[in-house]
Length: 216
Image (cartoon, rainbow, N blue to C red; front, top):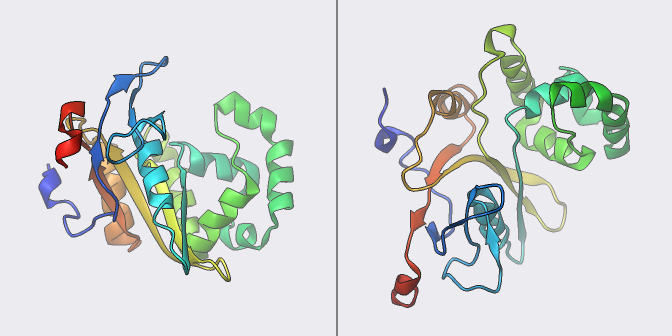
């Protein structure tokens, strides 16, 4: 088994990994204060929400940073609603994608697959490119992988504010300090990086007690 320290150690995300105020929400999920210094004004969020919020704050005068949370079944959802033809998907409008999802809503609900908005689908298609999008659709819809998942928690992108053209993307698996990385997740990070050449990293949060906040 590959040790975590050997996986993608050169990759980082330019945000603070420090988190404060650990607690369990009503669904018994761990959440932290979103503010990187442990201030209360931005409220709480689960780990992937914390990372996504901080990433969006990295927007600059020229670049816009955004992203989306990824469902483990996102690639299966896309196949049911839109098919496997990545080139055709990339040519669709937001309205056309939304209409396809609406027509397939009963089938998606039956499989417990998420409904993805047309805007998010196009961000995926344009960031990944048709070749990589098709590869992921085929990989995750192969019958031999019916019980396997591993999709990273977040898909992040950076685009120019003027044109909104995506010029960089990254997948991120977010983990709490002692939370293990599953074999499916490890395999997916390796596939994204080594087969498709798409940056994909493991981001492990660093917990601090509230009494440490002023010392950072």
